[in-house]
Image 1 (cartoon, rainbow, N blue to C red):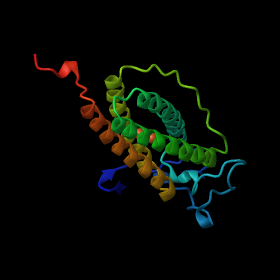
Image 2 (cartoon, protein in one colour; image 1 turned 90 degrees about the vertical axis):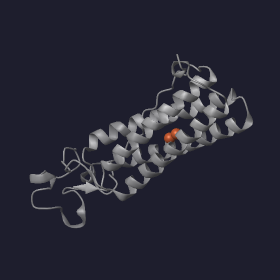
Image 3 (cartoon, helix red, strand yellow; image 1 turned 90 degrees about the horizontal axis):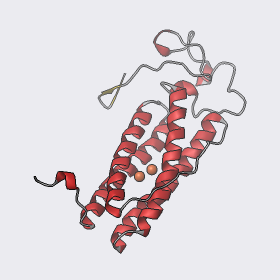
Image 4 (cartoon, rainbow, N blue to C red; image 1 turned 30 degrees about the horizontal axis):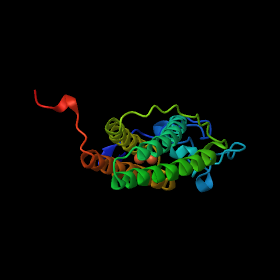
Length: 197
Ligand SMILES: [Fe+2]
Ligand SMILES: [Fe+2]
């Protein structure tokens, strides 16, 4: 199966909500009328379009839990980073990213609740604020990693609604990486390791 030229794993029904898997990941006897899992959804859990729409439902949920905690931590980190920004424009760029992370956090929490019937567990991060430029460089790396993770999550589901959510988050993180790169040069940051010998 290909999406946009990228090969993806065949959908294997290894989740607690899906019907029994047949060859190629499809349920023996086909999906029940309407595409809902035979026997109905478990109490409390209403998968968006059915958990059969995920290549690995448990992995998706575990990645989503990680993403929720990352978003929460990023929002807090950016609030502190903005406070030590050397100029107004840099601060505005950081706060823009901070507000987007809050939006992602809410969006992902709603999705988690919808898919599992439970509230996500969010732990309070212990933030050690480094020097401004080091913080900006860390942010660029974190943003790029988040964009890549969300792309993987997007490709792990056929639910268009979940894909839309991951698409919005992925493109926001790509935009943030660009913003932080701009802040890096605006604040005259430089990396010692990259200086010519
Ligand atoms: Fe985010
Ligand atoms: Fe971000």
